[in-house]
Image (tube, rainbow, N blue to C red; front, side, top):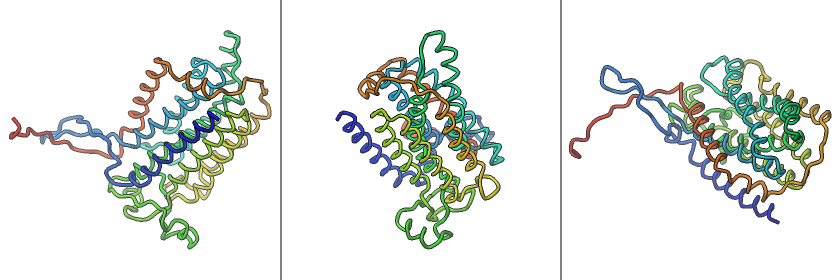
Length: 350
C-alpha cells in the first residue's frame, strides 16, 4: 500500500506542475531567468550574458532523473557509490553528445538535442554496467544486475525528459506545426489545446516567424506521455517486473520520438526521415538484443522505503547541488541571445 500512496502523491505533484507550466511558460517573460554583466562597452553599458529558463528546467530534469535512478537502485540495496559509478559516466557522455551530435545532424554550433543524448545513453548504459562488473565488480566482489539497472536508468530517463520538455516550452524550441497547416482532423483535436508562443527571442519566432501562431503542443504531449510511462513503469519495477518496465519505457519513448518528429516544425536535418528517427529504431533493436544476451541475475525485490532512506546522504545532496549548477551553466548560458545592461545610480535614494 505504501507504493501506491507514494505514487499517487507523486503523480499529483507532477500534474499540478504541468498544469501551471503549460499555461505559463509559452509567455515572453519565461525565457530569460537572469542577465549578468560581462564586458563593458565604450558607451558605458555592459554586454550581458543571458541565462535561460531552458537551463533552469534542464538542470531540474537532470537532478530529477538522477534522484529517481538512485531511488530505484537504492530500493534494490545497491550502494550509492556503485549507483553513482554507473550514472556519472553515462550522464557526462550524454551531456557532451547532446551538443556534438546536434551539430553534426543540424549543422548548427549553438544547439542541443535531447534525442541525441537519449540515443547515446541507451547505447552506452549496458556497456558501462558490463565494464564495471568486469573491473570494479571483480575487485570488490560485487555484481550490478544489468536488467534491473538498465530498467532503473530507462525509467529515470523517461521522468527526466518529461520534465525537461518544460525547458523547451520556455525557450520556444522543439515546437509543433502550425494548426493552420495541419489537416482538419489534427486541427479539431488541438483546436482548444495548443500552444501560442510570445517573444521575439523565442526560437519559434526567430527561426520560423511563428510568434502568436497556434501550434501543436508537442512538448506537452511528450511531457505527459513520458512522465505517465515513467509512473507506470516505476510501479512495475517496484512490483518486481524489471524487464517489463524496461521494455514498456523503451518502446513508448522511442516510438513516440519517431512519431512526434512528423508533428514538429523545427528543423531536424535534411530528409523526410530524420537522423533522430533512425536513432530511435537503432536504439530499440540494440536494447532488445542486449536483453536477450545478458544474464538475468536474481536480486532482492525492490523496497521503496529502503530506496527513499538511501537518499538521505549529505554527500549526495552536495553532489546533486553541484550537478544542478553545472547543468544550469552548461545548458542555460545562451549563445543565441544577447543583452546590454545600463547600470545607473538612483539619485533620489542616496
